[in-house]
Length: 415
Ligand SMILES: [Zn+2]
Image (cartoon, rainbow, N blue to C red; front, side, top):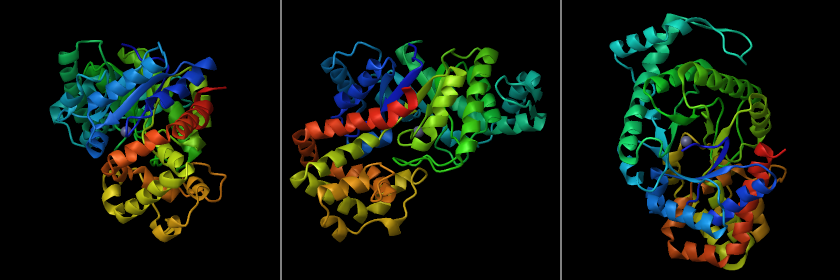
């Protein structure tokens, strides 16, 4: 199985928007751009919403059938590790091996020495086409990087071989993710990580590093855009070089996690993809759930009341909701509206505060982040929430498709 040049990771907390999501990719196809849909859900999301990996497979299959889509699509076991991979193994054909927890754990001296010896020819001045100046790598650099990343890649190898033993070689797509760590990986570190991935014979087709800057959930990129652009371009150069050097899959590409809503870096990303003729996987998750809330609020009446109730409960449970996401949100609590204020809101007030329109004065990124992690509240409402989605299906589906196509796919992939 091969992942095509462009692919888009779709997350759907409550499993009802598969068709509306796929519709956005079909709109791109009409513009001549093929983007492979990949439905992703992590173990964390499944446990919060009370769903199972098989539910995502059913949703994907049904959406594809309903819209008569005949291209490739995948179901991604997102951020899995050895302890939970078995829950996903039957229903998934895309596996995101999360080894971030192992980054920084020191490999044994023997492992480090063997690896550094293998890398001997790259120590000294490393010339990577596409990177302006040669990069100097000393033996100490190589040992330091190896000591930090080898155990993580080792672990990815264990998960990969486990999946391969069950599903068979070539019957699934592999992504290696290291994004949920404290520190971004430099292009040189990425080069060593790719060397180690090749050494472990992991057939990775995508790699998700941690980039410089903040990739907070559902809001724009926070950081130095120029620095990001330089790093992103260098990562692409490193991947090209490493594919040739280490014999990794030809279609190996970057994956951007929490890639939704990072509007200010879409243009540098698009430029770099063109320059390197590179591919990209963009992983998004909670942005669809926020469109459900926007659709409910916009529909007025009970939908609006439900959206207000969800906000009130999210505010009440803010500590608990934020805990699992603390590395990927920054909420200024002083900027959150009170429950009393929100109670007085009309549809448009709620929509304006939540919708990711930075030119709107009422847009509130703090409220947006809180609601982003607040899906547990809606999950706790069970059928009350699901029935409201079904009642307002048309308006919500419109929001979901528009958000993915107009705000994400268009600026990233369409000329
Ligand atoms: Zn991630």
